[in-house]
Image 1 (cartoon, rainbow over the protein chains, first blue to last red):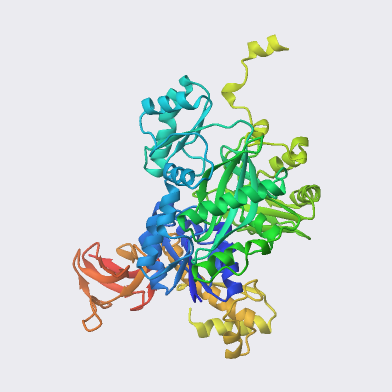
Image 2 (tube, helix red, strand yellow; image 1 turned 60 degrees about the vertical axis):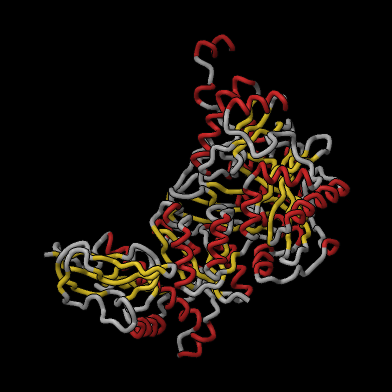
Length: 462
Length: 165
């Protein structure tokens, strides 16, 4: 059993991990930057240590500072949460070298899945369907991309080989766009991941994003905990996630679940992970990537399965064998998660500031994961995700009704949030029918200023 | 602020039915809250120590930890550590363990009152098994040593006050 765990993260996930540790009787060390000295995770942990200035590179991404904090304060394990260092193979390896248990997969699995073209090759060989795309290690020159695009046929998706989080990703509909957007996407990839390596994939119209939660122990046993439909996305970032996927049949779930478990087993994966698929309208599915960490949206799976994924991740890291088998996993009801961002709902720009009044909703089947409190200042330095509202009920229509009530009850004064956008989506007839794909949210996008017609055109139109 | 002083304050808070108390003095700021949301594994240990209710006892820990944080912040902003114009605060550039000497057997690098040259080692911060010497940014004299030998140190934590000549 771990005695003391260092939480190498901040915000809602740091609090989630601290709560799990309390239940398990593991004491916690929070780390924080000077910008986060009043953050809730700092107050909740048993001990806390300032590791650097506000810039993430100097604090939450600063491997020597975090390891120094862990060893100085006597931690025996490190939980990376999501984002920051969670998918950094060097960090996982450095933890092990310093005698600390890393709560996550082995470094080589993080590196393997982080190299997207390589992951595609391995999956293809293992019989997991992948989308038609660039072969080999990827492309660095526009010329190579043009050859691939011609072979695949437009539209295609440009992606960063080292990518994630929608960075370095662009949909391209013709050769002119490719020439223009390739260097843009490559620039983004270089800035975010220090890599110029890109790859192309056939872009599927009207596809859904359906991912499977994997739980695997260190003894080569892996199971899945069902799926999450994360098609409600904005700029390739998830906004609403739900389980089960409203259109998935039991047969298709079984088939996709088996493919996901195969994807984990073929590399000997351990701990929690997520295998992401694109689901085409006709029911074909394709591996996109595997995330080697706990996900933001893990809560919806917890609600429908009753499995505490954070506690499981810690148990797996301690070397415990899986406590249950695939057929013992049962699903109850439906669940949705709404990501609450500190942003202006009209213009979609971040809205940091002081939360003057915070009243989270409650009641049966309503769960709020947040780091907010009255008087808390949302810092400008980090991700604008400030809360996750997770709703659970017997049926999907009940979830929607409960979510509407909860979102109306939710008070966050002082800053702007995207709660109005969530309410609009919950009233959308297509959303209510469960008929949507990854481009759904475009209908609620604010029009870019330059896209608005000039006054002369307006008069012609009217 | 000493633990014994905090305890005395808590007795006063209980006697007068106060739930919250904030006190500021030269050494820093302390805020005590009774019956906070914080419940932790130290509860049993703390409650057996004396008559202070367990939840209050855990708040002491929380509050006393915040003393450090406030002192640190205060030193930067409002000058809670009273610095004369010719004085400089030496803050830790990293998280690690504070040592006043190069090894357990050797004499401390400096004492309060020691004269120092620019570039002279003042102390060591051990991080990742690396011994990082913290050098004096100026010539002068050590006025106060604020950290205890062998204690864990945060980023930005005040270590010493020096007087520049």
